[in-house]
Length: 338
Image 1 (cartoon, rainbow, N blue to C red):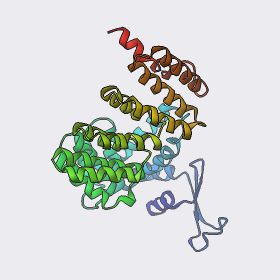
Image 2: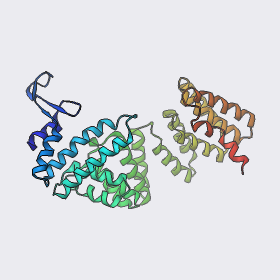
Image 3: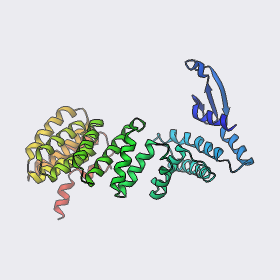
Image 4: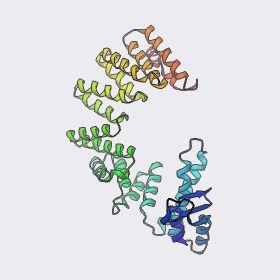
């Protein structure tokens, strides 16, 4: 019964309301009507097993798997009641922790438990679970270990775990690959390996050119060295790839307000307007920060005009009580309070 239920939960091609799971005939996969077997209410079967043997690690593990199927689907919904998600998560935790207590050592369970404890800030317990997967060489566990050790300022370990994860980068999502590369880069910088730090950040940008974090890391690096040509090239590339995220605009504002090179910003804004004219969000960002630049130059009336245009763009896509409207022009209010 355990083997059948395990097969059902892992290999079903369709399920209905988590009550009936269907296994397709492997010899006729193209024909979706060829059903080899179906199983109803696997949680009931497992519940009966636990009545007879409450110490069955495998049964607890499979019950956790059953509820995880629901969590994976519900997690993608923006309208799901958060209390339902929490209840599902706690139910999975209950079964998985019992499975571990009864001697189970399973890669997916260890990883899930590690993520659970990490999300609740219990990093040492999380680390123990991820380390249980060392012998299995689990890429995702290496990734989470890199994250934990970097947070704990254990930079040599963080860099080593990142390298282990990246050896199997095809098993990581694109976002996880990016984060792992960036952890490796920042760890290398902390231990004084500048050339490799730069190499890893450039790999981040090549992997996901629309993500701003690696650009911002490089911008900070070159600003500290006063290599302003590199700074301007990065600001330009970052915002041309992504004019939606505000950290890039804030970096541009800091650079121009300190250097006084507002002509650079004006030229970049003109380029952005040419490629963003059909995006209300991008145009709203451009006019917001264009107004800020003019404010720094003492062009108060022109700045206010830019901010009003920005608000009109955002009014098309945001509710009137959104925090964005308080952020636009905030620089003038902050200055008046000093």
